[in-house]
Image 1 (cartoon, rainbow, N blue to C red):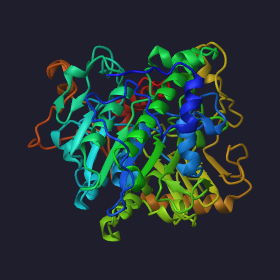
Image 2: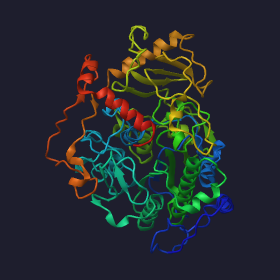
Image 3: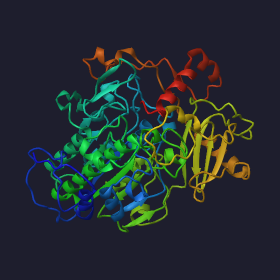
Image 4: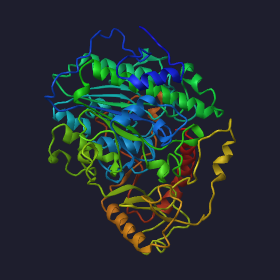
Length: 570
C-alpha cells in the first residue's frame, strides 16, 4: 500500500488547486483497491448518490473560508464551487444533532431533549421513529454508515444496522481513543468500542480513526456499482472531538501555533481535510461524481479550551448561544443549479430528512409529521427558504435559572426553564443558556482550567434575552426590555411547542452495561424481548419537579454532568 504523508502547506496548496485530478494515496487508501480510470461520463439516469459528511465539535471559525488560522484547502474549494450555508443551525451537543438528522424531528418530539445518551443508559433513538436511511431504503438506496453513532445501543434493535443502514463500521459511544478505540464512562468503566456491523472489530486497533473511516468509505465506493443502485453514505467522523490526537505529520505545519491544544486540534482538522479530498477523488474515479450530492456539516459548536473556536460568535458547545448552535455547512454537487455562492437561507439540521427524501424521489407522504422542510430549492435554486422558525430546544430538566419565573415571562412562560427559539430575525433565550462569553482563538501556550469562570456577567440575574440575529449575529445587544411585544410572541410560541412535547427519556444508568461484564467491549446488554422499565421517566407537565429532583439528588447530578460536558470529558 503506497503512502504519502502531508508534510506542509505547500502540499496542501497543490491539491487545493487540483484536488480532484490526483490522489494523495495517503493512509486513507483502500488496500487492493481496483486500478480504474475515471468513468464519470455516464448520463444521470437515477436518483443522486448522497454522501453526508459530519464532523464532531468543529467550531464556526475552524475552517479556512472563515478566516481561520486552520488551513482547509479541500473543504474551502468544495464549498467555493458549491453553496455555503451561512444561516445553518444544528444542536449544541452530539446526540441531539444526530437524532434530528436521522429522524427529521425536534428533540421535544423524540424525548431526547435533555443532554446526551450516555453509554450505560438503557436508552436509544425511539423505535417508533422511521429513520432517514429506512426511508431511503424504501426508495431503492443502498445505505451505509461509517463512524460515530451516539444514538444508543442498549438493545440490538438500537444498532445502526437495525435502524436502516445496510452496513455499519464505527463506534457506538460518544468519545473514544483515536487509536485504541477505548471509551470510558467514568473511572474504571472503560471498554473497547469499534464495531463491524453488530460484531466487535477487535482487529482494527491501532489505526487512526480518521484514516480508517475514510478507507472504509473508499472501499464502499470501489465495490458498489454506481449505475445499478443509488448510494447513501453517512460518514460521521469522530474528529475533531477530544481526545486531541493526530499523526505527527499533520502537527508539523502548525508548529508556529503556541497554544498546544489549538495546534493538535488544527492537525486533526487537516487530517479531515485530506480525508475529504480522498473521498471526492474516489467519487470521480468510480463514476459517482456527476450524479452525486455531497453535504458537509458539523454537529455542534466548538469547545474553545479543547482547541476549537467559534469566534466571533458568542458561546460554545453545549450552549444555545450562536457559538453552540450555528453550524458549518455547505453542499457540493454538479446537480446544483446556482453554484459558487453563499446562501443566507434559514436551514436547520432537521431539514436534511425531507430534503434528501425528496431528492431520492420520495413524495411528501414519506415525510409527514417531521419538523424539517425540503430546502433543496433554496439551496440549489437560490429561492427563499420555506423555514421561518427554529425551535432550538426546550429542556425541562436542565438547571432552572434562579432568577426566572412565570411572572418574568409575563404569565405566559416560566423563564426559569432553559429554552430557545428563532423566528424570522428574532431569537429568544430563557433560563440558563450556558456559558455566554466571546472567546477569541487561543494563542497563549496554556492557562488554568479555572479560567472557565471568568465569563463577564454584566447582568447575572437575567432569565430572558432577545436578539435581532440578522442585525446582531454576535448577540451583543439584548433587546428584551425594548421589545416586550416580540418577547411575548416568542414566549407564546414556546408554549405552543411545549404542548406537543413528549416526556423526556433520560433513564438511570444500568450496571449491567459495564464492559467488564460484556467481554471488555461496549455492546448491547439488554435482550430485545426484555421490556423497558425505566425507573425515571420525567413528565413535562410534572409540577412537583423540584421535590422529585431533591429526593433523587438529580439536581447535583445534572450540575456535575454539565460541568463535565463543558470541560469536554464526555
